[in-house]
Image (tube, rainbow, N blue to C red):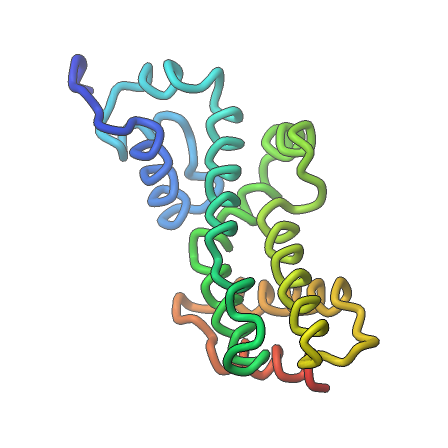
Length: 189
């Protein structure tokens, strides 16, 4: 591997390389060597920025969770239809990388332990998505567009679990119509 080559944003380059390896080969293929080879850098670059590989993976997951903060779902309350808003947001959340990261967290005990130590219960990414969906549903309930007695936390968990199952079994093409049907059934049904 080349040495002395300046990397523009080494963390993001390593994260992007890890995503490519994860999508191509799954959790078993994700090693520090595979990531640095994919990024085109020396293995020492990873260890210069992270204490160990599980620390790197934890930061990757935290970074991808932070992207959920930019999900425009909360801005959609009161606009369009609740079903369409949910279907669009859920399809955005469950891209191939998110589904692969859920598998990674499930696969690696050390990673799961670090994420729990960081205060992330359950399956990170899914839990954060459920929180975002529940907040959206609560806003819609306050606007009268979701029934006043609706348990938005349970509705959110139902939507996240169902959508994850749809995407986990998908062949790479987002199951948009199925996601819309699930959203309509859960919210309107």
